[in-house]
Amino acid sequence: MIFFLLKRIILLFIILYVPKSFSVSENLSNVYLQSYSKTNNTLQNKNEKLAYALGVSLGNYVNQSFEKQKKMGVKLDKNSLLKGIQDAISGNLKLSHQEISSILEELEAKLKHANKIQSEKNIKENFIQGELYMKNFSKMKGVKKTSSGLLYLLEREGEGEALTNDTKITVHYKGTLINGVEFDSSYRRGQPISLMLKDVILGWQEGLKYIKKGGKIKLVIPPNLAYGEKEVNGIPSNSTLIFDIELLDVVNRL
Image 1 (cartoon, rainbow, N blue to C red):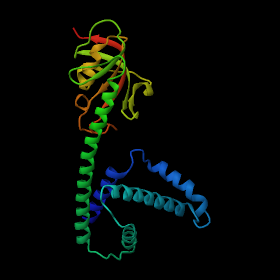
Image 2: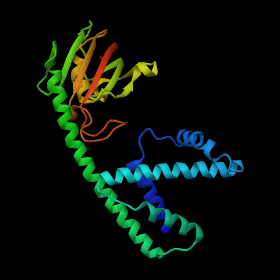
Image 3: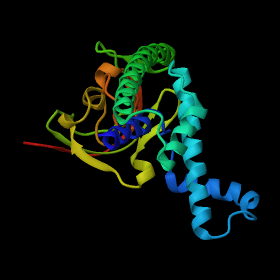
Image 4: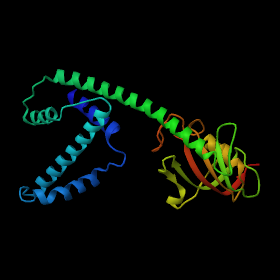
């Protein structure tokens, strides 16, 4: 039971607190390089060095977790945590397994509650920042706003047949957040994508109908026309999204 609970807590820590860019192998490598010169005289073999590197990596992770927890109002004592690790290794526990299980369950509930509060705060903040970005973008020359709230800047109209929801499209595109962070790009992959217009987000379904084959458009899409409050593939909840799209090919179904 206690092993199962510990696994749950560790998994929860990883979900809530490990940075998205965290890489175990990369982190271990960096830790090893930074600490090797200082410990080379005391670590006698490869196994000792590996264990030390893992220990430092764990320590860095725990330290990062503690700092993030503080910001969420969850404060834990580092010395007590280290003492707990030592006692677990030595088998000299100061609390019963039943007490430990109860405490860990309480901590898990507390962390989930804190994360929920932080998530709700982020949802509101992302919406506010998105509204501000759209307000400023709407003032740019050539930008138009639709009744749904979509903003678009027509860069090249293209020519040919108009699109419908049953149109198969081939596009090159780049998607960014309002802070400039790129979350997806067919250009970066070096391969355009083909799909049915009816299968994409509402902002695309509406916005791409303003261009034809060979056209190019910039879309600024509010959350209700994108992914709403869901977090999807590195896109924070309630995000306003920016897409630069080139419509390479169009196949309309008869």
